Length: 495
Figure 1 (tube, rainbow, N blue to C red):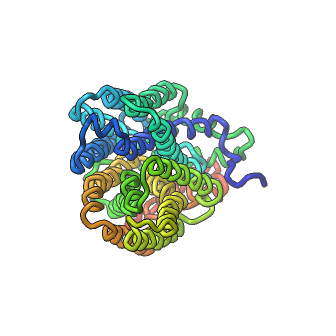
Figure 2 (cartoon, rainbow, N blue to C red):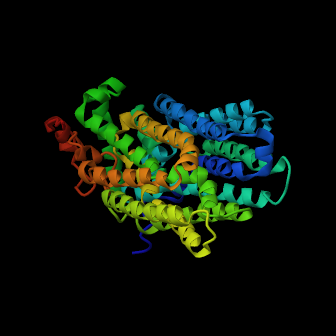
Figure 3 (cartoon, rainbow, N blue to C red):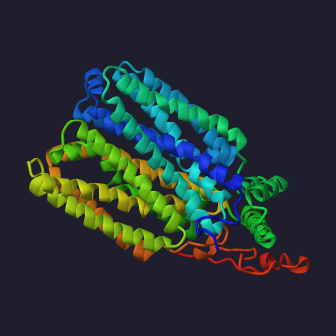
């Protein structure tokens, strides 16, 4: 049977496309890691003299720009396509990261981070959306999960570069690691000229022959021809029906009950991914290590270890979990595990934080690292996969843009509040994340429908909407009755 995580339907070119756009995801993860460790560099502190409030502002302005960029990505994605959105984001990212690298004053640093954040917001959903729309349904979790994987790679890379550069002194400790972001943005831009446009976006623009050509190139020569034909039929029938019978404006989305539900679930899954506590740890883990009595280069070394454990755990998730375990199970079990873990971390910080008890502090660090592993085995890849698959093609760009906007909003709030909260209330701050993780588990259990294993078009049935084509497990319709489903379908609405 071969390896489960290897799709017999996807061509090598399909894999290349899914992996390559991950450079944009790497760019986001790399920047997050750079400013999570920059505060521990002597040059950064001496050059910019950031107070706790200013540090929160430098970090949060990036995510604020990302929030605005997310809202822009919807109309850009509809007008210029998935590939075009990534290309535009790469150009803006190069500009923003160049300004950060050249910054001599805090003001220019903040402007550069704002522009770079805008770019990341523009491509943040475009990348997993592109991966989702080119992937076979049976392995969509793996393909879209590469988005989270490359974010983790970028984060780990930034941590280890910062650790290595910490043994030097002067401007290079800041300029070099920050300047590397320009390279990732340039590679991403030029690489998009070797990528196809999403076949679903092409079909929506009535470029039918081009869509068919692209999809056939994305599928393996060894794939069952009937499977490829049915996939093309589904995409064509469903998108054409939606264009003729549905509207795509935001007001129309809010008027239609099933679309409102999809949008609410998209926002909730993005909020849940951030509210669990991972954002606060990513940005301020060095402070948390210091609260456990860790000092010097060991702080940055631990940040490097943290950056490696997540991507390694995410690889395990992609290879053995994401396309085998139901989405609901992944979220619920993940939230419960994160609740237990962060409660244990809280206990060690409360009782032994700042003491010389090496054994207790070591256990505290182990459970802090375990938190990242548990997150990577569940919500890290699960959230982008679920967000991309719950929206129909005509509103996927807008729905995903609004959903990921809330992800950045939560990151802004946590980036701004966490340093102050850690300084003022210490270990009690962890109660907030315990409550949030429990709330996520309950919310998923009662309100999230299952979507695993269905094509993007078949997901419409999960929400009670019309599906007008052939299912992947059905025989192809004969030429004499190929429109029968469309003519006889009855539209259903879900409150």
